[in-house]
Image (cartoon, rainbow, N blue to C red; front, side, top):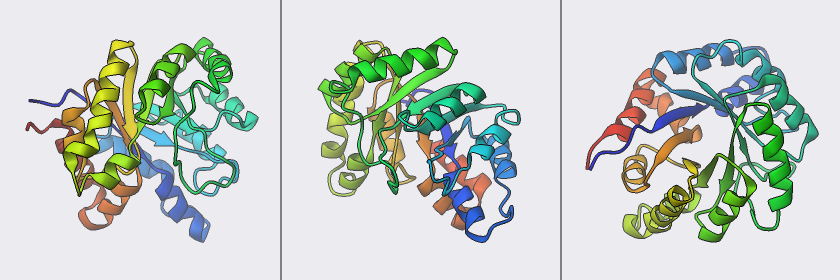
Length: 245
């Protein structure tokens, strides 16, 4: 069985973290993003947070005219500053994540039932501006069915639980995601995925998640690049997405 043509979007937040740790412009975030594209990445992801501890809002504005692949901006739409930025930059995709202020990293998906009306309003705003929407959700059928009601174009499956369980029991780890992807496909939702996907677990995930359109990978990919080099690492990840079982 062959994995479908799943796009690799490289999250460059960790490059910004490294740059910000010393001030100045080393490493050059814009150059790294363009190099990622040149090395085969089919998208660039950024996740600006209100404190701008890694990606800065200026970075997002500077990246937009330079990129030739899909630009994906992740963030919490409850921040008006984030909404204004997305509407100004008009990326190919905005991924809505229910982060709390000061959160180290994303750790849960939306409750699409409780927040349905809010999500409907914000998704309508972005869709009217011609921006594809994706919302971060757990592999929970009720949350996926709720996502359909919001009008979103896609969901992004939050994959930390899969990554934790994969080394112990791959079949058990993937099962809820396989079920979730089938339901999402039945509902006509596009499927993205991200969080702790790596060279070790990516191929198995891609082979068993039906209709997977895009994965967004940052921390593991940048870590691997320390050992293998950025170009080689991106090629290794692309190979994991295209390998057959």
